[in-house]
Image 1 (cartoon, rainbow, N blue to C red):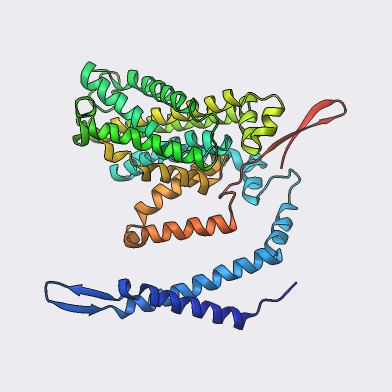
Image 2 (tube, rainbow, N blue to C red):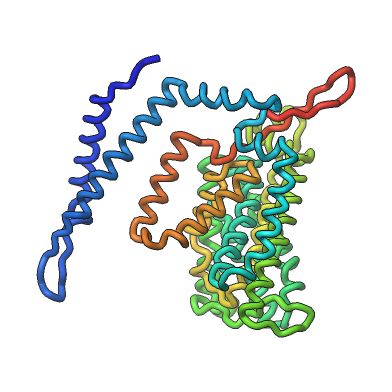
Length: 419
């Protein structure tokens, strides 16, 4: 194995740090105080930038060295020797293969979820509710992108359809939350089918451009059709979910919304996991790997694409209805292209096709900006850096999707392994 040249790597990192200092000098050091008409020189900041860039570059180059020499793979192989199931990571092995650990762990998580809104503030409950909404959106987009392999950049349009379905039905006809919830999913599913028809023959960049345009069309229509959607003013005073006619305070309504979201997330994970292991899920995964070979093997590509778009849109519609009831106000500014990119980042960061990865990705992307508001000025910089590092060192996401392999032993289907 080639040894790393520390002196050479240190010189390279020092050069990179100096380059970064020069590049960020006007932004990080110079500040014009227009009140006192003076220029402030913030030298301490550039010192932190230089030190941070040096250590980040050194760590980055060390990780590249480890990947190149295969050291990381060897260490992972040593970890995997502790079990025989062929599961990908030590985390998976500890959690999924040991029932003594998994059962108490699940019980602990369930109790923590139930007690959370009663032992924390309403602010914390609302943050977790927002994260759970993102989990639902991530699960829906995971069907299209993670399982179906179709790059979708306009997913937030279905979210908007669900939200406006509840808001408009309630405004004009007084429809309550529980009736609007399935209707929002149903209308979003119809829009998913309408989008799926013209993009059946598209894939890759072309599909991404068309879906991006679809998302923008929905937003622009909502913004300019004042008679229908009330334009940029939006719709206010949307009722929160009711509980058998009992009038709830804002705090109790937040807790009730939290439990609704927990139930919907559990339901979503259950349905998507069953779909993933069904014949339809196999067709999606085959289509993702190679659609031409998949079609040659007799899989109905048209049906697979249409169902992926429709089911993905359905979960976005449900999340949209809950979002409208949670915030009690919606307008087109809540459904911009940036929201679609955030949901896509959840899927990519967590691991495309991985249900557990989507949950962790949603929690990280939603919760970290909230709890790291001290670094809010550099949030987008850190966000971009994390995504770049992820794409280089772990392109499959935080938790790689596990592929089920069924083997026949002694003439019967006795074992199921995962690789």
